[in-house]
Image (cartoon, rainbow, N blue to C red; front, top):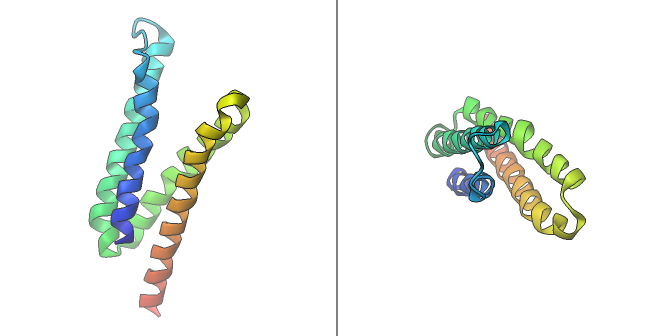
Length: 122
């Protein structure tokens, strides 16, 4: 069940690409193309993560745990830090609270899944 909840939680990360594209970036500019590429990249990582959660992670395959954890370290935490440093003070709480809670929740679920897996082994 934890893997399914984690998959649903990953879908919440799609808020970032939706927000990135909501202003309809100008694709004739370099920045606009980079926004589109970033939004598509985040979307692909989220969708791959959901598939991993729903199939191999539910089966208890060890590699799947790492495959889901890597984006948290490589994408989730750095984006949280960048937002904490550069988002305007008036919107900082609204930006960081959902990200922080999502990251903590994801780490808790991954920790629980790892604990269950280790308990089964011993």
